[in-house]
Length: 152
Picture 1 (cartoon, rainbow, N blue to C red):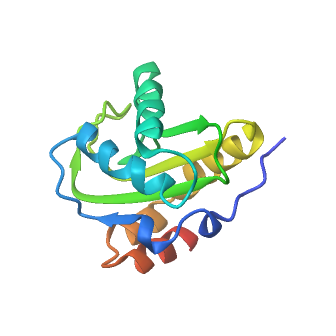
Picture 2 (cartoon, rainbow, N blue to C red):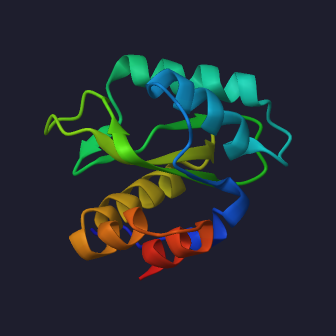
């Protein structure tokens, strides 16, 4: 049974998109994205960072094709949230294809929303494996362009 696609636009707004952040590595990027992902919610950014780092210890969240999707289910959280970082130079991320990661989609999901968690991950994987869509996201000049590329 296929999972229904999720409207990613409802999960992310332009304020949660970083274009070319000045970071030196994966940990620094995760530290920048974690509080941004849960900003405006009741969940603490440091607690979310710890959940993300614990998930990264289990296995790399790089999915290949220059994409990583660090994610964690946490409680209490008011709603599913997504943030994005576009990295023109790429970062080493233990990707299965050995390629540097150029797009990071960080996902925070409510602990009880197991099916939504899977649907969002499946939607992201499907959309970001499309080379035309990924190219549009990576070449966007602003946050709105990133979101439009993702929605194509």
